[in-house]
Image (cartoon, rainbow, N blue to C red; front, side, top):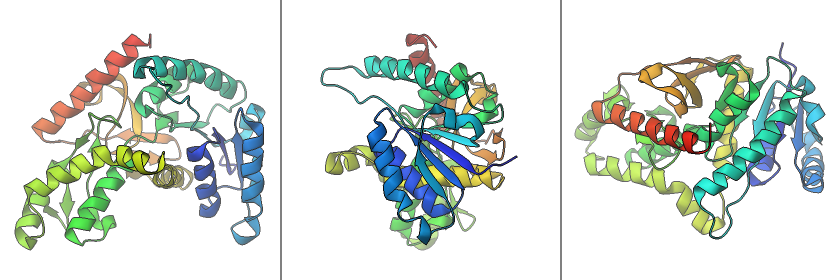
Length: 313
């Protein structure tokens, strides 16, 4: 039964912005922030609490892992930042070590029907790590995946075509990272494929599509170079995923889910169109993507499987 409580582990830029976005959205009656820096978590909670008279009734507090006892959804945004001279693999091993502590602490208290959502990067690897460490059913563990990447692509299509982004239907699939794939074969506006739409309106061409894809892949790098981190749009993406779960919407979102044979892929977490409802991942859809897109999806799986093997997962 839905109790109306979300716990966010990690009160950094992403965690605190996610808490704030959830507070404004009115999805939960209670939001709890957990962080090793207790003062930061308490400060954020107090700051947000001063605005609760202006939104739907909600309690925002800082706490410890015992707060997971009656949580519906636990969102993990915590992670270790990369140090100078440190390789990505070494950083990942450190974050896996951190996740062993976090997941162990969560599962000491969390109810059996809890939904765990991983947002920390690399999100696909850490989603699979969360699944393995938690012992929960695969539907109860998901990552933010390429929900944000997909939104970025919709924005870029909208900007180019002048069509409302909500009516630009497309997906970024595979890894949330450099090997992600734009699923142009199933992209459409008003029932027309992008090729048909471009020909019909003259507002875009195939070169524009490739530029949009490259811009999506480089979006985070661009933002980080300008302001140091990305956190607003990912907070909105996490809120949208929560909305689908809380409302039992059975919405189609490109969350990162655990593959056990879908598309012939096993034992990794990847993003494809997925039905999200009260149980978390309700169904991973096996969409007939184009040949090159299928190759890209499988290449993503191979890349992630190799990384998991190298970190002993």
